[in-house]
Amino acid sequence: MDVFSGKGALVTGGSRGIGRAVVRRLAADGAEVVFSYRDDDAAAERVTEETGALAVRADVGDRAALERLFAAAESRLPGLDILVNNAAGMTGKKLITDITDDEYERVFAVNTRAVFLAIQWAGRVMRDGGRIVNVSTLNTKISAPTLALYQGSKAAIEQFAMVAARELGGRGITANTVSPGATDTDMLHSANPPGAAERMIPLTALGRLGRPDDIAAVVAFLAGPDGRWITGQNLLATGGMIL
Image (cartoon, rainbow, N blue to C red; front, side):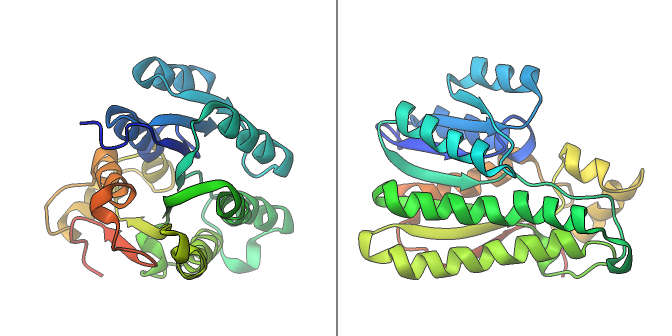
């Protein structure tokens, strides 16, 4: 399929997990893709070999690095048509009373400020009819102890998408959020004790963990022509995980 032929896409956090699957899907469907990664050169190189996408090493929590990423995207792409804000990080699970200032600043720099700046940039350079997709989490709907920073930082980007939808809609640009449930990624397993991911399966109507490709398919739908009448929404891509 070439539904994205002639389109340019930027995906943050594209070397592993959901981001890698999104890069692969958009490239397979014809888009020219630039993606960021933080420090895993080997993983980024594999994605480039698989897709032909341009990998840019950039810690999106660093504003100067983020601006270099934007410049690389503008230089490489035929134009910006798709922005997928996927990069995210979290501290170890900690109670609110134990979170340090440095931890707060780091999580919000990566998960929230970087998304805000990317949407701001896209609002200036994106071609009419473009697509903005933020990747959030089901955790903003299911409050859990020790996840205050992660949930709070992700909840903010859901609101960013809703406002951007109203502000950019006159140019045919849509802005939406995709909120995955339990998805089989390194982050899921590293953030939970052994066996926890398997215990999530019975909570899911479809009887398995999500796969990165499942989420990439939802992102591609919103980014493509069939998603043209959806904006300002938060799609729960959870496999029917019980709330």
